[in-house]
Amino acid sequence: MGAIYRREIGAFFSSGIAYIFLAVFYLFAGYFFYASSLYSATTDMSGMFSSLFMVIVFLIPILTMRLFSEELKQKTDQGLLTAPVSLPGIVLGKYFAALTLYTIGIAIVMLYGMILSFFGEVAWGIVFANFLALFLLGAAFIAVGLFVSALTENQIIAAVGGFVALMLLYMIDVVASYVKVEAVAHVLTSLSFYTRYYEFTCGLFNLPSVLFYISTAVIFNFLTVRVFERRRWA
Image (spheres, rainbow, N blue to C red):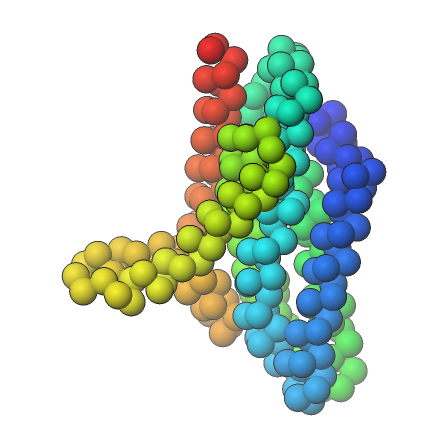
């Protein structure tokens, strides 16, 4: 797994994807930080964290589109399948490489908190809760994007498919609002990624939400392993 991880980290930077991801994320994060905190002269960063949800929806597919699609296109996936590395090791190596780059990107929000501390008292408990929410959201979404990337050899299709999948997860709230059967609406709401994320931006730490995001990451990584298990024996 370590060799796969190191190779993918290097590939992110050599392909330029790392620079594109970081530049775009920093651009939007900086703008939302200025608009919601600096311009409003407040140490409250919840507005920025709330706005970053959609940025993540757009950027994660760019981060994950090549992880397996490129292997499939260049037929190097067969080499991976016969390498002395377990399938979970291959999947997790790629997954943690993407998660590492993502974490490097979102770490800038802690710098923003330090900047605000020069102008007033910062509620660090809320800031850390928001950072955790941003991290968990990315962890879940990267697993979804990785799974989509394993289904096609076309990087564009992987990116578009990943975006559509994440948008569908985002729109669960919208669907739930139109459902008239209360029990069904309640189930859909409990599966809402945005509602759980929004609770963190309000300073509410919810353990079930933490487990929800972790479970999503585990499930989609497992599904990715299953995709390649079927290919290995096909």
